[in-house]
Length: 382
Ligand code: ATP
Image 1 (cartoon, protein in one colour):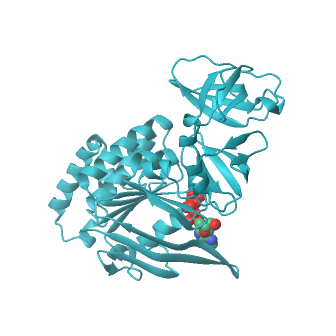
Image 2 (tube, rainbow, N blue to C red):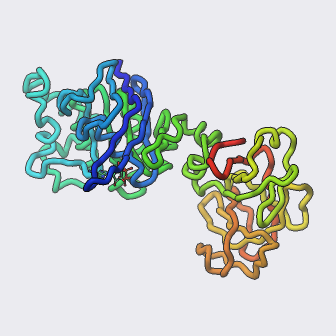
Image 3 (tube, rainbow, N blue to C red):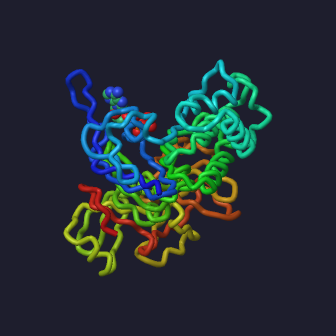
């Protein structure tokens, strides 16, 4: 069992007399063998959290427990935790083999032969056997990344910590390594905390994701839960690509009134809104339905104009403006601002349906698909 618990963990840095709260009361239980992705925008406290778990940073208050033991005061070497850094942190003068085995004699009871066969085995697992006698300078970025992983694996730790390990790789290699890393983690079954600012990585890799903003944990959930039931406005906007469309509205009678449209609500949705009067309406690009112009048939259908179409392969991102906004003409090249219009929202459509700038279409925001948030607090209402 390797259960890692963060209990109300806080980190305050003293920046020349000024307190900077980098991590603010974070609590999360990471199960044995779980792959938890810690995600959030730059500066939200991800690395600091990871460094506290590793013992590279002290904890200002709260507890970090590994298998029920408080490890706050333990030096990094005595934590049974291995970390993979973004920069790989390999020793340039040592061979791959030496990099992987460095320090193992002291930190384990293993004999030289055992270490040797462990390194060979891990090299095979990672497909780097032919590279074991090279030095890091003679390896590609992807190969160095595997060596860094190998060095963590041979330690057979209770926990892996990974700080943006794929961010120095090009897009294709990154997506390949994503799958490989996941498979490896599943096979090894080691509790893993993986830091990234990339929500695609978070969505595809984690058993669960923990979303941080300004040092505060916003939600811990499976990727699908965070996507379909975001805890608040921040999570809703952070998870999903392109981002959820948001419209600030005011509740008047039984309708949400925005600058560009009015959106009547059913009784069930009104009940969910409760006492909130300033309400942010959110709709995911893939939930917007686009229909032929002139076919508006309900209160949730709006006449719009296509501003820009961005082809993405088997789907298109269509940037749209409400027709009432005085749109003139559009363009089908990938620059939203080119037509001089301000795009109001984005719809993602699949298939070969042709759509071009300047075209009139009806956009439908189905009530079953909309998300509602209290504008002031960001709290999810629906
Ligand atoms: P990024 O994705 O850019 O790496 P992050 O989410 O990992 O960001 P942290 O590096 O954990 O964020 O930083 C969190 C906050 O703490 C930031 O405001 C940062 O400026 C601050 N911070 C980090 N280290 C120190 C330090 N040693 N002294 C003072 N402030 C620090």
